[in-house]
Amino acid sequence: MQARVSSRFDVLDGHTIAGYQDSGTYRGYDGIKAALQMAPNQVTDVVKDATVLGRGGAGFPAGVKWGFCPPGVWPRYIVVNGDESEPGTYKDRVLMERDPHQLIEGCLIAAYAIGAAQVFLYVRGEMPHAQERIAAALNEAYAANLVGKNILGTDFSVDIILTWGAGAYIVGEETALIESLEGNRGMPRLKPPFFPAAKGLYMQPTIVNNVETLSNLPWLFCHSVDEYRSIGTETSPGTRLVALSGHVNTPGVFEIPQGTTTYRELFESEQYGGGIRNGHELKMFIPGGASAPWFFQEQVDLPLEGRPVGAAGSMLGSGAIVVMDETTDAVRACLRIVRFFARESCGKCTPCREGTTWEEKILQRILDGYGRPSDIDLLLDVADNISPGPYPVAADPSQGLDAVPFPPRQTTICPLGPSSVAPITSAIRRFRHEFEAKITLRDRIPVTVEAFSFDEPADEPALGTLAGAFDLDVDRSSAVKAVRHDAPTVDAPTVDEPTIEPAVEPTAETPADEPVAVETVADEPVADQAAVDDAAGDHGRDDDDGHGGPKLSGSGGRFDV
Ligand SMILES: Cc1cc2nc3c(=O)[nH]c(=O)nc-3n(C[C@H](O)[C@H](O)[C@H](O)COP(=O)(O)O)c2cc1C
Ligand code: SF4
Image (tube, rainbow, N blue to C red; front, top):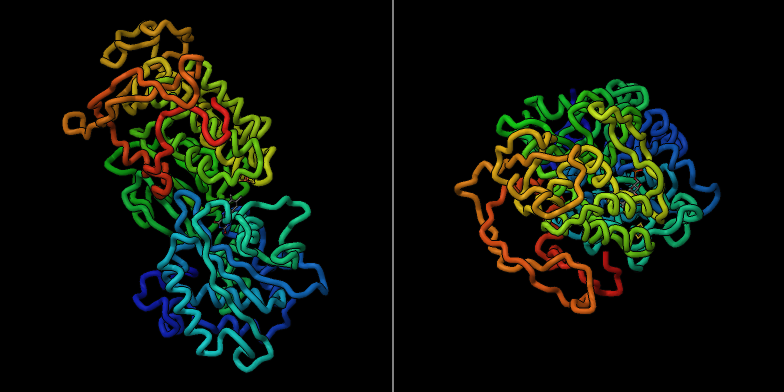
């Protein structure tokens, strides 16, 4: 397959104007020259006919979106969404760093099509290299009269303004991004009425497009609709960038044909992931960003196409695929993702602000060995308050359970709150026994577990602390056997945590904001925890920031769980 958007990723000077014009699978800035030969509405028609799907998450066709600008309302704006902060997602960063002129040319084509005289290119705050590359490319493009007044001697003029965020995931949501551009705190607006195409930046018609969406346009205009549609499927033509991470041998950003490549190919092919690392087995994978419900072995033969993936209970989303092998502690991976959403909640709506915090605290105490038998139902109940009704989830043939198709319902302003529910429902439905094991064993060592009968002779030391010892009311049919995957048992790093703050409910003797030490746990071996954290993939942005402890006392006006 001929690379389209990634054709200069390996070119040393692909980020310069000379490199852009002399390498890759088309000549840089020939696309805008071709577009300028057409009327603006014809440019929109080409994008519509090619079915260029949005690559920012929802997969909405770009040409159709451009057509939503109300006629005769000016000025209009293009806003480029380069905030890319979803855990596991890093394809737009690579595009901005390695081929910034391709993105600039895409902006020009879009601006010409909708009649925008200003483009705002909003880059994630923590991507200084991308910002520098784009700034340098803009300087070159202005100097070459490819951006600015009377571009290439025509009467088409447009300015491209580079701006960047302050490090909030929520400003990836298009209306929050617009708020941020206006100088306000980045919080989403209600849709309706604030659909950006009608009421966007400064309440004017605004098209928000993802970096990859726009980066597809130069290739399209240097080729043809038929060539664009020559690979992929009828409903998902063209290629797509995916960011593969986690427990594969060769993680990375890959350009794949849309709709025809399967997850199995992506994981196993030498061209892409190169197989699960160290001969391990697949346990679960996230098929489209941290917001996506998890998939399992039964779903690996699905193609990466929106409809089948949605029907199977998840989404393609941001194109971030995280692979987790059987050494992964499902509860810990779940917490890692939920914690990200809890930290990134903008706080505007109660179910998300409070619910994600509750979810994090409950999961944290389960992992810390202070889980209560009622915690699993409590987690599901909190999740149901954020996203009522059955949440999208994959089928589980072993339990005779069908898939719940995408999308979820929400009681919130934006989908961030419901995103936190995805790992919870996925993990509890499939690995309930792992949650129960942690609650009954009260063991802080990361374990994965498989179902077993209490009649079987115990062959693992960890079983010595099973439910009976704690006098818990445990349903024995769902009892579990702990299987430690801490291969480096002997040389394992140790956790030097002399004091564990307890997950106790406040009483008269133990007021809410005074944690009480009840137990000392020292030098416990830790399984491959770094890999688990990597697999959950939150870029380390919420590591070690003082929020991760087991404390359950209320603070800052938030309720205790
Ligand atoms: C919480 C949240 C975060 C988002 N983050 C991004 C992001 O980082 N980049 C992006 O392009 N779209 C992101 N989106 C989707 C945008 O709101 C919007 O749909 C997208 O930028 C439209 O571009 P497209 O039509 O080209 O896909 C996010 C949405 C939500 C709800
Ligand atoms: S769902 Fe969460 S992130 Fe979205 S608006 Fe509500 S509080 Fe903010």
